[in-house]
Image 1 (cartoon, helix red, strand yellow):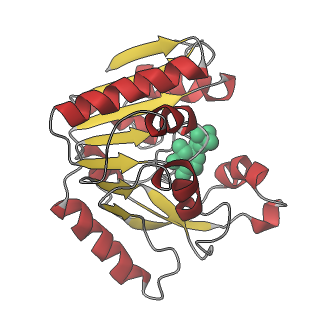
Image 2 (image 1 turned 180 degrees about the vertical axis):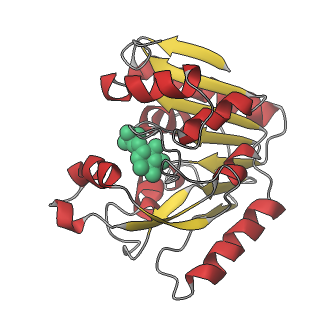
Length: 233
Ligand code: GLP
């Protein structure tokens, strides 16, 4: 893993932009995208740049179960607001959290990923080491699946909702095997709240208890950190 430590959000954005630019120059066609506060400076730098995604494809990691796409906390809404409204793709896929037949939706999502191999996957990380919505204990062999969110994640995400009762309890997520199939992975973490998870996934054992630790086995990973997130390394 290549570790890059930056001093500011602005610098993080520029580093992310550089990685996206190089990927496009190297022929990348499919981008795996993430939500959360972490990718925002990167998306800001990208959407302010000259990069053109109109011939390319994006596939998002996850979406809440049963949250309307117009809800400001849905990942559909987030992606439109922070990325697609400014830089559209030829096609952008997100899991449909409202699908009546969830098994069919998950199968369809796996087919989409198989037909559009991801060239560059961007990831944030949860405080418990989760990636996408793959919580601790998720099989490293997992493909797209329905997840029951842990109390830790519900609590962490409650800051975005009017009350904790409104945080969805389930989500659809790309699996860990699907994430690992990406040719290159950029994982970012900022702030002291992520320091423990960062230390565990980089320096601890590869274990399903820390989903991001599997990235130690991937041949092409860049870890983008600020000094606070890197403080326990
Ligand atoms: C959610 C998302 C993850 C994200 C994590 C951390 O659980 N499903 O993809 O990495 O939150 O979010 P943040 O970047 O806001 O700390």
